[in-house]
Image (tube, rainbow, N blue to C red; front, side, top):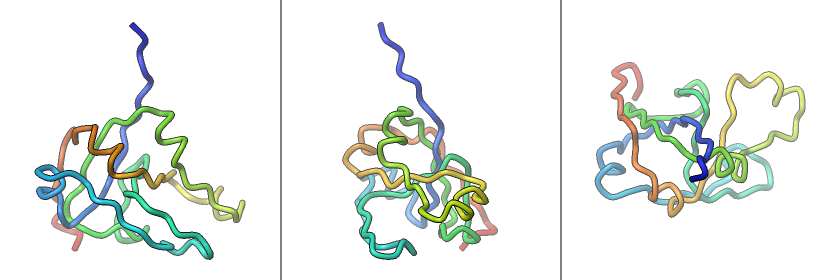
Amino acid sequence: MVEIACMKVFHRTRAGKQVQEHGFRDGSGSYMLAGITLTGVFFSDVPVDANEGAKGRDLLTFEVPDHIFEEFKIVEEDEEFRDSKRYREACIPADILNQCRPLEMFEDDDEE
């Protein structure tokens, strides 16, 4: 049996219970990336909050195969900005994510 390397990823949302019950839905937008439209669900390799643009009280954690995160990772063009970020992020299509189950959901009273 071949073991697939996985990584823990995080998604902050206002709709954690709905995601757990009904799955993710793709969102589309430029998300502060000039000239690019992304479709999917944003995940990071560490928990992020409103300071990084992630809104919501619910923090979902998942395990996804490393190759999925790599395939959909967001690479900043500005090398200086890219090197200063404390996290990596990916925009993964909902249909792929909905094949995974959330490991845990946390509620953060400090977030909106």
